[in-house]
Image (tube, rainbow, N blue to C red):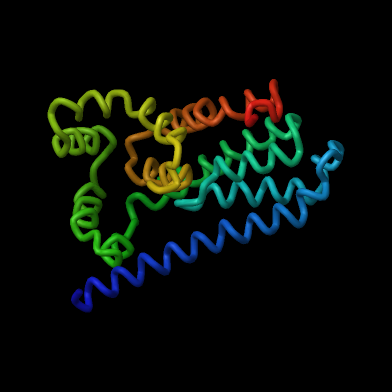
Length: 217
C-alpha cells in the first residue's frame, strides 16, 4: 500500500472514529438524563427533554448518524406521547441537513472528497456547480444507465423517501447524509424536501403513537 492510499485510509478511520464517538456520547447522555425521567410524562416539556430533542435534531443532520435508532430510544424512554415530538425533531434535523447542503451547493469545495480518495466524485461535483436544476437532472440522467436514469430521476422524491427509510441506511450516510446530498445536488425543491421528509419519517412515530411498545415487541 503506497503512502497516498495509507493517508486516505487513515482519514476514513478518523472519520469513522469521530462518528462512532458522537453516537456513543449521545447514548451516554440518553442513559444519564433521559432514562431517569421515564414515566414522568409532564417532564416531556421540561428543559432536559427539550434539550435532548434539540440535540437529536442536530445529530440527525450529521451524516452517518443512525437517526432511527436514536429516535426509537427517545420514544421507548418517554412512551407514545413522545412520538409527535420525535417526529417533529426528525423533520427539523433532515431539513437542516438539506438546507446546509443547498446553501453550500455552489460553494462546496471537493477537497474533502479528494482527501478521501474520491477524485472522480470531486471532479463530477465541480462540473455541476454552475448548472441549474434542469441541467443537473439531464446531466445525472446521461451519467446513469438509460433504462434506469429517467425513471429514477422522475421519481426522485419517492426514491429519497425510500432511502430515508432503508434499513441500515447509516452505512450510506444516514438520514442526515442523504438529506445533505439532496441539498448539494440541487435537484430537490425546498418544499418538496420538507413534504418528503415529513411523510417519510412519519410511519414509525405514528405506529408508536397508536400502539406504543407493542410495535417493538
